[in-house]
Image (tube, rainbow over all chains, first blue to last red; front, side, top):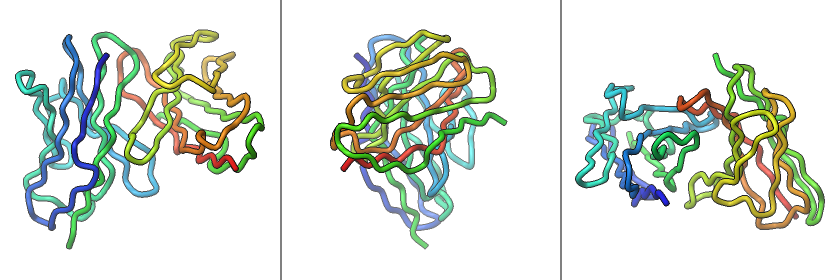
Length: 109
Length: 111
């Protein structure tokens, strides 16, 4: 069975500092990886997916199949980036996603 | 703009009561999902459905059942609520292998 691990429950950085949210996965096939974000008092929403290979709100994530990782990075964090971030995996052609336990990011002024 | 609407934002129930959580989506999505969200555990899949009257168990189906009589509506049922089912419940929908769109969540407290 597949598994998604986010080792940091809480992460705090200062505004303007780089930020990296870690995500590791275990799955024997070719997965599709996602990052979802939940801002305070808002619904969970897609931030980015690895097949798009695009940068959203300054965030990027690269799928590293050798290390089975999909870390989320931003070079200069902003206070509005403070949120709960979830890494998620879709195994093969499945319809459902498996989520990690989430990382609460706080960007300090 | 996809809209997933969960009928109740907050519910308080007593142990043993039957609980219905309803979810409606307006984008003709074939897939619908129920997750529960708990601090430190993330989102865990309870049940999902890929068509009317079809359902599949997720990772934690025990104590729950679902109903999908119409394409736009997916209900989660707790036949006899227990305190360990106190949680935030999230409904989501998607088309094919696309993005999941989530509702605002239903916070259930079981006393």
